Image (cartoon, rainbow, N blue to C red; front, side, top):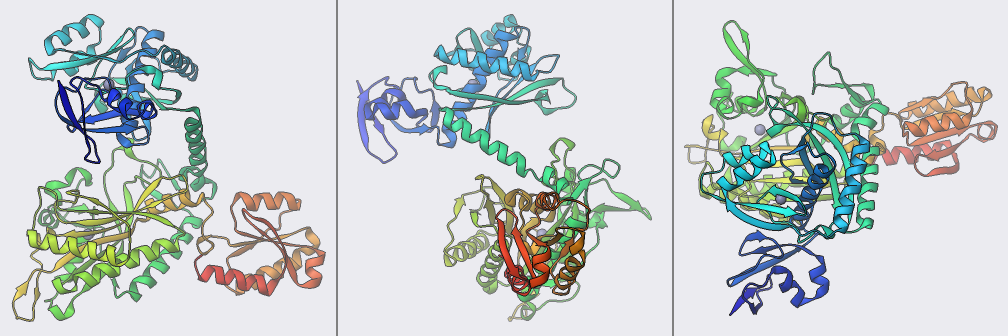
Length: 638
Ligand SMILES: [Zn+2]
Ligand SMILES: [Zn+2]
């Protein structure tokens, strides 16, 4: 008997019943069959060697797809568990999922794995891969599974099975002598896993709960070829060099102190100087765009957070209350209610709108200590927050303006490539459908008018409104979340926000939250990693370092320095009693963009010998000329 298989291009072909996705691929070309790693049949992921018994729609995935990588990496996790149990028979297995890059598996083992162990496990995995062991699937009733894993002494698997409803059919996968409880699917055999690297090991609590036992987690990654693995490892090396925690320290930008508290950032003079440059620029652009800048307190009464809904829905991210005069106050996790209070401080008419309030507002949110990460995940941070409150007629223009402003500001920081997402109405949502449609259409119109490529995340909006997210992409192809333009149909309702329309009746305004940089802390982390610490000139704490070749030229060096200072160029003169080579290296380490080297020749001709960080020697230049060029580079924010 034949069945009909439909392909993504809607073409249909007939095959004998029971054909596998692998053989379907084979019928197209052996090259395709060699490269596919996963298949979706009638919207269900199945093994490549599983039979297809009915008419079906099929999608085949290679390693270059997200689904393909997930199946590939997860299959490698099984391979790793097999290798670990062959080398350490007493170790119990738990779970081993694929993650964004690679996979991990958690093992119950008393003594942590050493680097030496990792090397042995990796070698064992390669050996098992060469044996091309098939991943075979078996389906049995849950009770039989419990018995089987009890006999194997795999208590974690028994625990997982005990949570599955009685009588349910479960699936086991076996390759060689190793059997694991798993839904699948997996690769056809271990031989498809060509290049493997185990990356690191760490402790991890069973089910992420610190009341449970500490397990030993091994992270790894695998690829279909050594070339791809090597490229990935090079990328990791480069990412390590760019790590903002490392560069943040080397460039003396920030620190975190145990005595003050985890996730609370101390901005050192270099970081604070850059931050004030950013804030000045940010304010200037906002004033030009018709925003007002406001300032609001760090704490607010309990009742405020009840009205806003934060205490009902967000409390686990808020700090415990502070009690003053028997009144409870909470540290603010968001600035919105304060801006709404300013809006409501007087009666508003349609003639007052739009009202656009911006604030560098510092907020506090609880993050688990394990989730804290440098500047990226912190407990106190400053949002470049703003709220746009407007009438329905003003919506399209206002969204267009804010989108342009976002992209313009991001470009000033040297960010080139951006990824833009539009998230629309989820199933559970507050507000009128007509308002959602109007809002989503304003977002879409703005994107189209600006000829911006974007992806739609259908149903991915928050329950209170649709939004646009802007992520920037760096040289390592990583994306970093920056701007969000987010509608809100919830807070205007909760706070009963109104304006008096031309008809003399009260109306509910539209409200948009937006942060362009996001949080200054995370933005700085992104800025450091994106530029690998080589910031655009306008942000560099020191733009020019003046380096006399020897003490004889100190006077001339000081004279150059005074001129730079008078021209508003941030500079320093290095008067250390060191060789010029040493001084140049020191300035290079600090990633100072320009070095002016001065000696006899320069003094006589009123010139400087210029070095540009990352480029090297630019030769001798008239002081006035190079200063003008630097001024221009600074002002144009290039
Ligand atoms: Zn599995
Ligand atoms: Zn807000």
